[in-house]
Length: 130
Image (tube, rainbow, N blue to C red; front, side, top):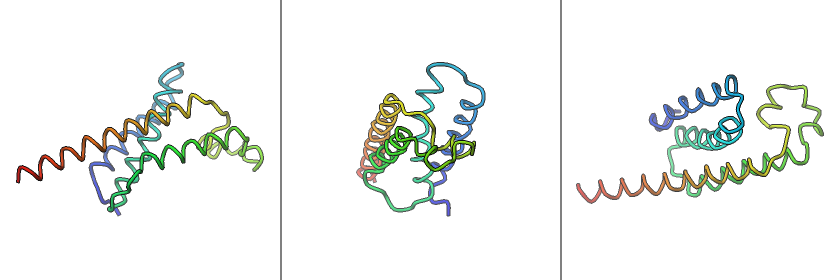
């Protein structure tokens, strides 16, 4: 099941950070912005940790997925489905639309694209040296 331990470890660390942010941080920057950026990176590390084959454009797919979840918040899908009282679903799906969240998801996608370019460059350099 685990294909890349480095990414699973990163996933677990980021998950702990996200839980700490959700439970203990009540500010106007880290929780709403850093938390939204980290959640996309969290999903990325999880997928990279369990999927062996490279997924081209994964950061873009995660951005689209995150933006669709945000759009679902705009259309109040949680309320339409009658799930607002379900704390888990309400927390995962979210209940309030904010365009700034989409900008955070975009920032995360850019960070991940840059990370992939950096990693690819390292792999190319190491293959040239061998």
